[in-house]
Length: 273
Image (tube, rainbow, N blue to C red):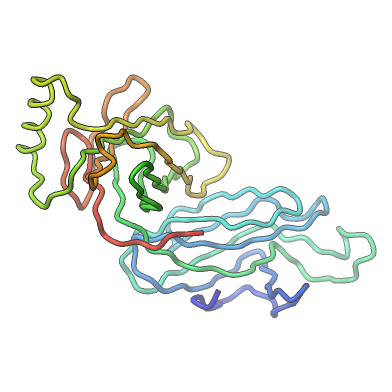
């Protein structure tokens, strides 16, 4: 983690088992560079003892304050979205303070601590989609494409943790061309109905109706391709449906739209491990 700079609210660097971290205070700020849309990754660690910080919030650029929950002693990486096209972003962590001297038997540390912070990084992702309701697709990645399998990863933003019943669908057309437009897509569907052949591969997947935290929800899709499509490159459209299988209209997307689905752009994005 080398691409962030500390602001206010931090204690000095400490080391444990050749790893470096900082304790956050009740409110701590750092700055990170990179143009959105992107995902900011934070590595956080809480301690095992009851009475210490489990719940905290993170806000980016003074926008939505996102509530995060950790179990006692949990260490993991969290992902949060950045939509701003600014080059520098302000990240604020807020958590209830606790003092080791009054919380952990045998401790003499009188500082007011929050969580342990191991670092942050920013990852670019392929452009996402904003729908009129439901979760927002922050971005996506093509992980692998072979003759037999297709593997994708999608990053969904739930904002306030609960959105209702929604599902994601993919329409995958064999063949890639720069000439896709709504007329050619409609013609292909009509021809498919006339010949009795489905013009695209259909993939459907439900999404959680709510989350326990305001982090980005990561959805991984691994699908086997039919034999007749294994020699082709693929063109992929993505859309959102509600609990009654009605398509949700697209509010904003920087790509071709067709019947409330969006062409997933070949724009490059980094793979997040």
